[in-house]
Amino acid sequence: MDKKPKPPLLVILGPTGSGKSDLAIKLAKKFNGEIVNADSRQVYKEMYIGTGSPFTSPLPSLERRGLRGGSLPLHGVPHHLFHIVAPNQEFTVAHYQQRAIKTIAEIHARGKLPILVGGTGLYIRAVVENLDIPPVAPNKKLREQFEKEISLTRSDLKQGQTLKRYYQWLLKLDPQTKVDPHNPRRIIRALEVCLATKKPWSMLQQKKEPLFNALQIGIKIPSQELYRRIDARVEKMMQQGLVEETKKLIKKYPLSLPAMSGIGYREVGSILRSL
Image 1 (cartoon, helix red, strand yellow):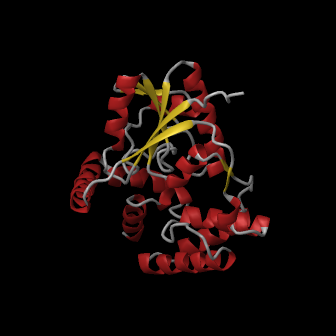
Image 2 (cartoon, rainbow, N blue to C red; image 1 turned 90 degrees about the vertical axis):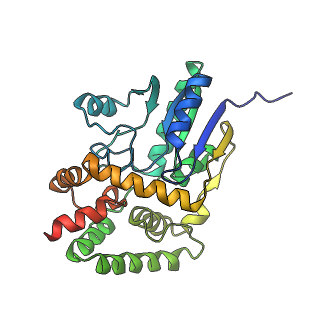
Image 3 (cartoon, helix red, strand yellow; image 1 turned 180 degrees about the vertical axis):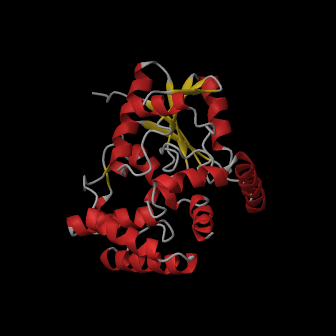
């Protein structure tokens, strides 16, 4: 007996500045689709400019709708999972996977095509490969220890040394790790899982039976053109008010939070703290 065909999922992935969002909107309009965010920075509220969010205007209505998890319209296309949690709120890959799969099922139920868009590889793999992610709670003691050490070292050099030390710790627990050595959020999360399960994080991300028939479109452009686009993007962010946005954030949240570790907020925040 033939198996029931899996529902479709279109995935658009690529580096920052490659034009994923523009392509996704064009395809959504052509194929009656809805967009699902797969960017680990754009899930946070109050973080618009520095995350490169398509929603660059932090309107109160956007925050309220994001809180309820509702869709956000942009260019006539529904967008999902953008700006849904506070920067200091726990939101793991497992949380994202659960929300994304539920959202995709709801889009299918409406007879539309879900389009997963983003640059966070683990988020995309969690959905496309249906990863079996262990439900490990955050290690409060570890996070507080890390935040304390980072907060005591104002200079970027010393903060980098602290991060390197934690990454070396992860390597001892998981020699095959593929975690970005410059991403504190991923490093701390991997350490939490390793310490809780007594197993390497890289060995725990087992694939289950895929839920969707996924077509993945990867955008690749020449390095020189990509750098030009990123430079232009940074200039645009500064014009849009990245400094002011960062000022508001660091008044409410520690700069050591994983959510604040993204490129842009980290650098601008460090400069503002040193003034």
